[in-house]
Length: 239
Image (cartoon, rainbow, N blue to C red; front, side, top):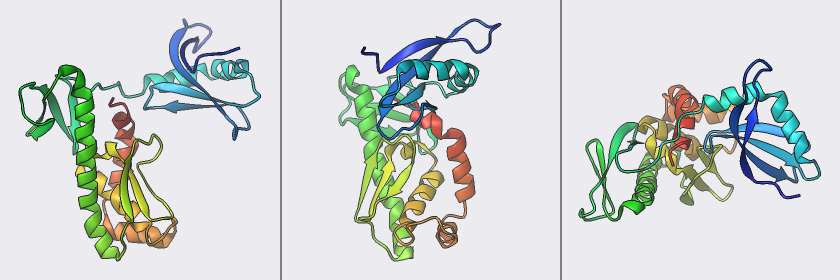
């Protein structure tokens, strides 16, 4: 029997409390050995992963068993933020108003406290995302240059992704990849993530030598890591 990939299920956090709606996304995995739950900030939902031959009822049983925890975690997620006219979007850690000006030349223009977007209103969200991606690549490449020169390394390429579990990565072929959403974080946070991945071009590990290298480039790494821990999920809720 087919079942939906995503749905809303009523869960009861406590026998004495009424049921509450909870967004659920189902996925099957050939690598999974047991049923598992995780909260996905980007989707604002609980993700239930099932092994290939395990029925959906086992996932429902686990949801019911941990209903209180699931509902509490989903409720604590940052609210979804839409890229629409009149909405706000952080750029470099500073909130900017999205203003639609259909007659303005150019797709999007960054001004003090304002991101002006031209064209038809139904394309505003896409144009804002395109601007953010282009700006992210520009700022990341700019941040990577001095770190690479100082460590005497050179990335093969710098790419952007929309990953949900990591802000950056370094592939064996020396390609660096970053979440475009870093452009919304303060510049010093973006700088730390970039330095972290550039350092992997010298040390493809997390040894004491690696961390000493990162610390030498970004003494603010502890503060940046803490900022991402507290605020990173909110960046994933910008859609």
